[in-house]
Image 1: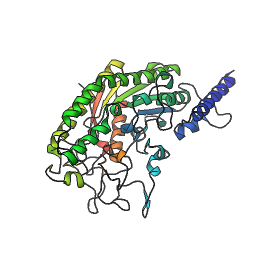
Image 2: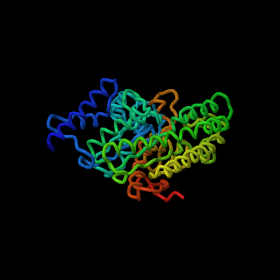
Image 3: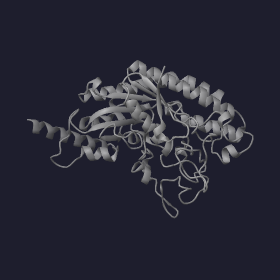
Image 4: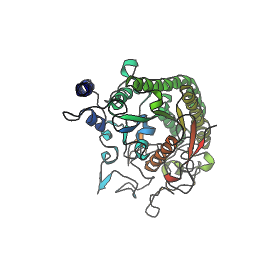
Length: 398
């Protein structure tokens, strides 16, 4: 009977993959390999397969911008060692960093948080996708929407939960629902084209949306719980970590370029007025973090506060440097976030304002430290000036 049950589970999993493929949806390559293993390979039930840590959500956890080790003005070769997608001569292959997801734009990098966290579990599964909103997390049966040719993330999680012993699920979502990319674009346009501020209009727009967005973030947590319960997991058998977003730009006073000329944009790649920078760093990012903290508390999940993760390592920060022929790429001196390359002379615009390779390593270290803490409550993760990602530190969230 045991052998019959396992064979049945294997056939069910295979049918699930075929059904998703027939609908024009794909699963991450590693996940597909697990679910469509060769004849006689059983799909384990909850707690029976290899232990797994799973990441879900958007670009801030998928690994977007993991291609870059700091920022350099050089547009050829390895860009002074910053471009990890460089092969040789003038050849670049983003798939070297983003794997098969370089093609669909999910940009799950080899340095993504879930992969940089170290030995949290035997297997790291990255379901997050750059550009995803909360609707892309929900199950299809409960309003979920496929994205970039892939099934809703909760449906993908169901397959992972059936074949692994899932211990940790970390979730970053809500930023795209609030229009993070639009906020950055509008603030940059106000600097470059109009000479006006963006924070007043953008704050109003955020205030109009944020209650609805947080309700959807809460539903995302509920969807994860529903999937795991459906797979036979008790709530106490694993933990959910809901995380906030770091600020990719510094306060105005901490910017190494004056706002009175074009160096802030043309050299630094951070076209924002001081007042808008202060608003983003000290109002918008904390507002979102505090609201996410409230969602975590209401849903009984762990909260990881990343608002200060990039402090002093942001794009244009005085305490960090551009990489050049005389200043090598370094986790201790380079910026930990990708600048705005609006002309795409190097990479893609969608990589802009995300934690880069160094930032991804830092986020992974934060996750590892958080998982070592009790599964309830929350922590804030900060870097140690002058140190690499191994210097990340946690402090309790009040």
